[in-house]
Amino acid sequence: LTSSNFDEMVYKNSDVVAVAFIAPWCGHCKALIPEWEEASKKIHGSGATLGIVDATVHEDLAREFRVEGFPTIKVFPGGVNTNGSSSAMEYQGGRQAEQIVQYVLAEVDRSGVPKEIPELVSPDVMDDMCKGGQNTICVFAALPHILDT
Image (cartoon, rainbow, N blue to C red; front, side, top):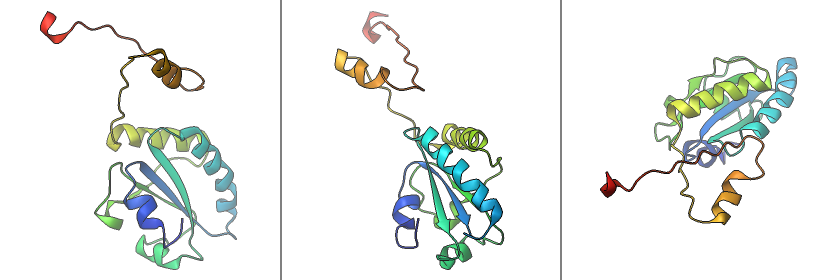
């Protein structure tokens, strides 16, 4: 993330967004980056996005979010954030990929935009929604028409 795309990628994004402010020379940051990248792959498509800001290059963003140490992680709730930096929350989770995933997905459940529930109207819908994903669970329910009750 950069100063020029932060507004579009974070504030105007309906996903929950977690942003790590890092410094390239920071040992803790160097340890976080591979965990952050692994977590990002695991949450892809789940209503959350992870981003990284080099706070030594984008000092304006670091000032705006009062970054005083590295890494500093801020979480932006789901939905379009019109409140700017005041909508950011301090990340309170661990620094391992599984801990990051768990924390961010909990925030998706808390504040994320509800996912659309697809209606099974053809075999193509079932193939698109239920086959191929390693973290996919499909639930089938047959409900009576509302006028039949």
